[in-house]
Image (cartoon, rainbow, N blue to C red; front, side, top):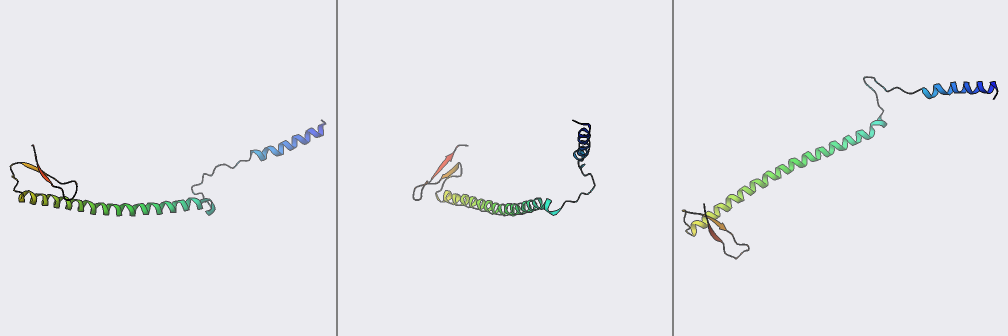
Length: 119
């Protein structure tokens, strides 16, 4: 190669080298603005998350109300069952000297029994 060709190559390398070395340094400002197109997806996801959380909150409140209602109904039915069993025990003239459990039939029309419980 001639000296002219060598010089052209060196000059081209010198021109290319600074371009390759130019890198943007990370932003470190206190507030960095971001355009709508860059944050649009995150904004929409946050909106869907809020809607989901609101729905879950309403669902849980509704569930707790129904649960409270069912627990109250269950307690009332249990109390009524014991009351009716006590009436049947009294009508059958079962002694109060021992503890008895009323065994209910498995299907309608069958007999029930008072079974003495050993204490």
